[in-house]
Length: 405
Image: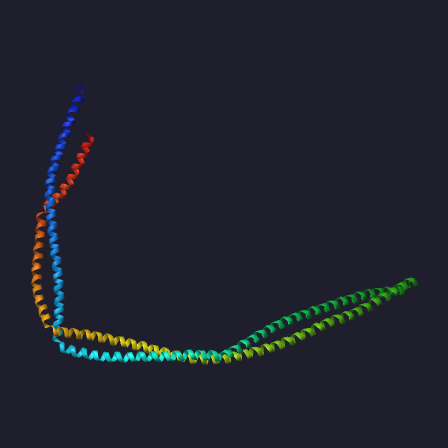
């Protein structure tokens, strides 16, 4: 030991291995003790599991035996009931079989009858449709032809209306040209008359002022010239009025002609439309009568099919009643003919009841044994769990010590 009281390093190194060795030995002893506890706990768990398995198997066997017994008891009760009511069952089910057999035959005949009638009417319907198509074909062609003429006449009316609108435009243009020409000529007259009045006024003043003969002569010539211009303008307005009025008259005549054409086209269109409507009405009436006749046959066929389906349903219901009654009658005959089977079943049930009671006692004993075993081994099983946990912890400690060595 040095002056400070520390243990030398050589001494510390010698003591460390001894401590680790003792720890390892202690861990080994603990592991051995835990192993014994584990073996005891594992044995207890195995015993409890085996007891539970035997108990479960016994319960399943009891359940199967009880189900078989219940089925046989139901069968015996049914056989006893049938045997007690044998005569009534034979009488009632025999009557049902006879009645349902008769009903089956009757409904089968109705099915065949309705089907045959429907097939015959379907043949008539097919022929009727062919006859109607052949009968209506020429009327249909007439209607289509009348419709074509009506449409063509309607197009003629449209063209005539366009021609009238064009002629009205021409009348308007000619009238405007006439009015513009007359207005222009009138303005020319007004201008010439205005100049004439000015020259006449100048000539009048010159005379009053006793102007020389040359000036008067010049003014007189100007008056004559303006008079000529006025007459020329008057002649021009007559010419313009005559020429433009002729254009207006021609345009109005053309308009009148086009309106007459429109009236004629409209009459033809109205007549064609009236003919088409008449032909269409006649065709629709004939088509309606044909459709009504076909619809009547279709309704009769549909009614026969409904009758057929109804008879089939009644047939199936009667067949079902027949089969049910026959099954009940066969069951009654079998029970009545085999009373020994009833006795055998009764004896079997008595035996099964004893076996079920015995099995019930076995199940009860096994249940009690399992319960007692669980109580008696509870400590061992809990110790097993604790030991398992301890072993895990110790193993972890050993691993740590070995690793750090």
